[in-house]
Length: 264
Image (tube, rainbow, N blue to C red):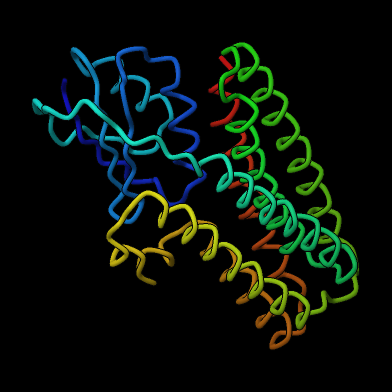
């Protein structure tokens, strides 16, 4: 049995973990995967060479690099019986905040909140794909991934068009207090999701420090919307909201393209 350790520089949250799990699902030589999101490390227990694993990880473009490969005597791995329950928990949290942010974003006229809601929806898709594909055929997973990716891109394009329309028209200012309040709640929700999933995989809770949580793309996005809300109030302009909305829509498209790669 071989143990290969990979550094995944862009593995910022459990969403990337699930993308990696889905990508490596068809590699028959893999016996177990252990994720350390805090240190952006992935340990792969496998038989034979690691070339196929390296190529699969490289295709995701998450900044993967093999650190080491060594022999190991470990052959028994504990099955995480709570994995499905945990995935359902974070899926529900993300989908709930998708609804909340989409609704409040439309009411408060904030494209930042609308865009962030799509980022929450993107995470929900990833968790949902993982759940629906467990024990299922590879073709089933690919079809689900393709539908999810296309749907995200369509929503993001609609968002881009709305940003352009608002940029060139006289629109009412977004409600900055709603932007800040809802984003703070979403920030807490993302922190809870990271804590739930990481706690289940590591007995060393020292890894669960704020420094890890605040490297997450999702948390950075939440902070960006909060900052945009402050700038909307200070500058009396909707431009900060449109800028953060555009940035998040781009991130949503990038995530959708990654999901589409899984369907090939």
